[in-house]
Length: 448
Image (cartoon, rainbow, N blue to C red):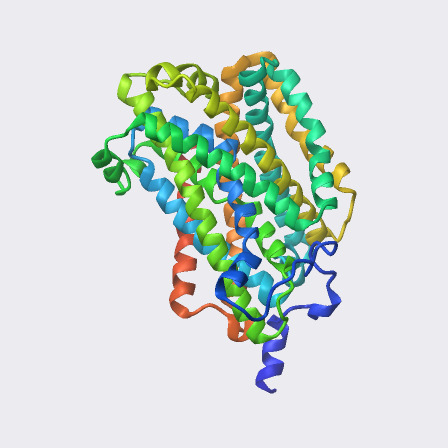
């Protein structure tokens, strides 16, 4: 038996041409210059990285970062840094998979695993998307309440209508969609830049917070928040999303073209995720300065933070900026979560339904628990639900990370584009850390 024949059973089940392109309506729709200056080529690839960075600063991050800063000061900055570095690596792997194979992660799983395994992976990813959507509903509803006085239940119901936002944006072209997302990201970053300047945090304490502390693992409360931060930062559905939307670029589908695309796509996502690092660190730092350092360590709700920020920071507009950034975050997350849901459903099940129907379905599943919890337990219940949703996201991470690492380290599937041995070891180490933290969290939750 030849070496090729031996390798065949572990290669892709379907040839690349047999697969329906991921997001076929926008696949290879964005022009990429094949010559000219490096800046023109970088600009052509800028966009997907910022779209996936949205998931790293969505309303779910706010709850965990606020709780972490208020309760433990600057200690969990190390977790934010670690999770961001993990995100940079994993998103680079997702982009590589999409560019090289012409498959998104969901399609790759369907091509490799048996139907029962695929159904289990699809269910885990759908659960993660619903948990993410849950955070978006709560965050947007809270922002509407803070800015316009709309009751939480009414705000949650209003979020159902944002199902049509993606339709409007997609009809104008994928570049327009990316521009909309980037504009809102600029709003978020500006709002927190002003708040950081007003907070004037102690530089030494901030830098010390980026150094890991053993207490993060040994303290169950701190570990719970830390896992929430990881779950809110490294989003499972973002790996599916990124492996798809990098294919919107019309790069040459040759080895040389793919290498060039991998380089620029990785640069794009790395730059965008550094912006996410700034926003997440800023939320925690502002919470540490305003709440932990002033004896308000019990602040765990976004509403409480809104009320206290302006008086504690001595900046009248601080609370308003906080709420505006929250609303921008919720709107942005709506767009990317909808796309991720479409990619997952089409990739695993080959099932296509209208965008508005898909959005209303997942949004409805998220609205129901929010309305129920708000009606019976009030705002405190929604705050706990927000943190819980991020822990659920963290528990789903292995179901996306392990297949991704499995594929990009396999020479039979990736050919010469398989990652190097050192990157493979690092990638499996990241997957191992995620698994270990999940088992530790599960143990503490069940037996503590």
